[in-house]
Length: 262
Image (cartoon, rainbow, N blue to C red):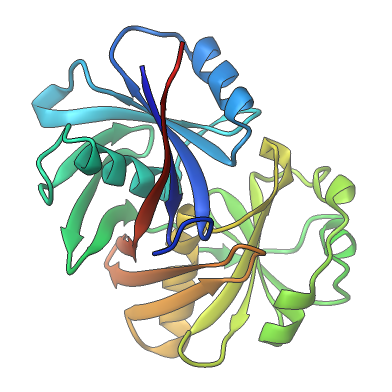
């Protein structure tokens, strides 16, 4: 069974966010998929079922080392890249994925992969007990999206300087925590993402977080087309375009490893 490792939201090897992509050619169960994801030990491992799909839709699932998740951007981008690179789908053709978050599409435009995802606009919320302390933040405005808490800090410098207490952060009842602020050009905003509860202390570049960041910053900046930089150690650029209740995520990808599962 073919297995690739792809760096997503980057145009160079060893940047962006690495994802494993497993191209399923036989029936497997979710316990096997979870075991493979734990073995790969990346923030996400994607499983694309090549055997069948209703109306041309390829079933796609995502697993962290600890759990299955309902939406993942960088592993979807990596999956589309892998399918084109491996010749499973003709280069540049539109790919439709059947997922727990509905049908997601991937296409190619000017050498960049474009993902059509559901927007998850956040609503104002009180930060849960222990969240600010775990982040080492005295005060911050908080919002809640479908999956995560979002905190806006006063400056890009504050976002970049965060040193969370991951043990305490793992006690907060949420999939993840997005921390963000406006950024200096050429970016519109900067962010970081922590998902300790599902086994990822800090995710290098998080497509699904930008489904909340896009409507959040589009409303504040008055523009639908934005460029975000996720300021992890590896770093990555995500271009976002808000289209009603959908967000188009744009980025590049690089294959760094090809292999086979025994």
